[in-house]
Amino acid sequence: MECPKCGRENSESTPFCVRCHATLAYTCPACRHVQREGGKCVQCGVDFAKYAALLAFRMSSEAAQDRERSKSRAAILKQIVLLPITGGLSLVGYLRARIRGG
Image (cartoon, rainbow, N blue to C red; front, side):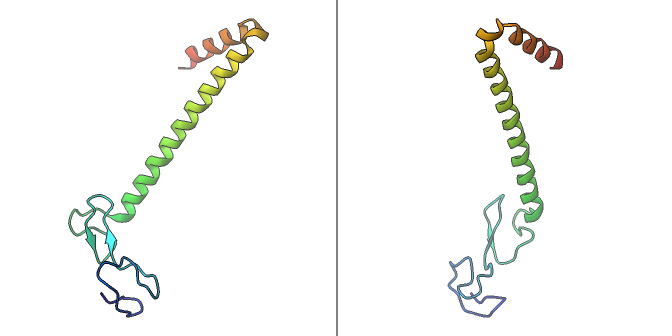
């Protein structure tokens, strides 16, 4: 397979040019079809850039949900630790606020 950037001959199984490291084979992230040109999959029609943006958004959303769960767990643990000091009043106030706030 000849590199379109530098013209060096590479083996068919090489995904990148050994000389200039240009991409020689693109793998579709949705169907795993391997093709010579990027941009859009010729088999399933997925746009690589849009698919990558979708995955990044999904990961960002999941990370935000994980942070919220972590904050909630930390707040509950804090109230449990403070239980002997406050006599349970801060825990009751915290639970009331959680029930009202949703």
